[in-house]
Length: 265
Image (tube, rainbow, N blue to C red; front, side, top):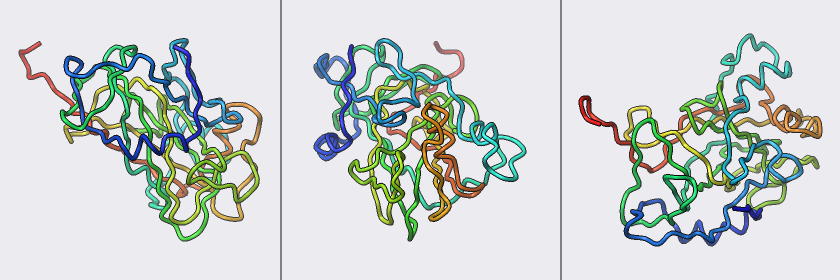
C-alpha cells in the first residue's frame, strides 16, 4: 500500500477526536483505505532517517542515540555509548497516541475507546502512532532529535528510528534558520511515527513500553542541522549539545501486555 505524506497539522482533527482504547477485529470494520501517515522528518522532510519496507512498514536497524553520539565524536567526554546523563526534563515525550492497530501489518483496525488493546509478550503488534513532545524549559531548545526503539525499552543502544522536527509544523519553530525544527518554552508538538512494528514487552507495568531518547542543543551553541545532506547528517546534527542535554526514558503505550503463565501455550 502506497504511503501518503501528510503535514503534522493534518493530524490535529484526528488527535482531538480519537483516544487510545481498543477494539476487537470481530466487532469493528477495518479501514483498508486508511492513508498511512509517513513521518515528515529527516532528509528534507521525506523520512530520510527512517527505513521503509515496500509495504510501508518502518524498520528498525539503525543505531540508537548513544551509539550515534559515540560514533560521531562530537560530544566531549564520551567513552562508551551509555556515557550520557540523559535525565533532563527540558523536553519530554509525554505519551504515545495510537490511531490504528494491526496484528498482521496489513489489516488496519481503527482505535475505539470501548475495549483495551492487548498483545502477547514477545510477539509483534503493528501500531499507527503519533507521539506528543512537550518543552518545559524557559528558553528555546534548538535542533531537537528523537530516537525511538520499537523493539526495546531503551533508545541509548541497539536499533532505533530517528526523527527531527519539521520547522514550521504545528508546535515546531525555526529559531536558527536551519532544516531541523526547534521548540520554544511551552511548545507542544506531535510526531507522526507512521505504522510501526512494535515488540510486545514491558518493564513490569503490564503495559507495552518503548525506549525513547530526546536530544537538543542549548541556545547559542547549536550548529547547522543537518551537518551533511544524508541520514547521518540529521542524526549527528540533532545529537545532544552536551552529555546532559537529553532525556531518555521508557514510555508506556496503552496496550496491555499479556504474559502466558508457565505450562500454558
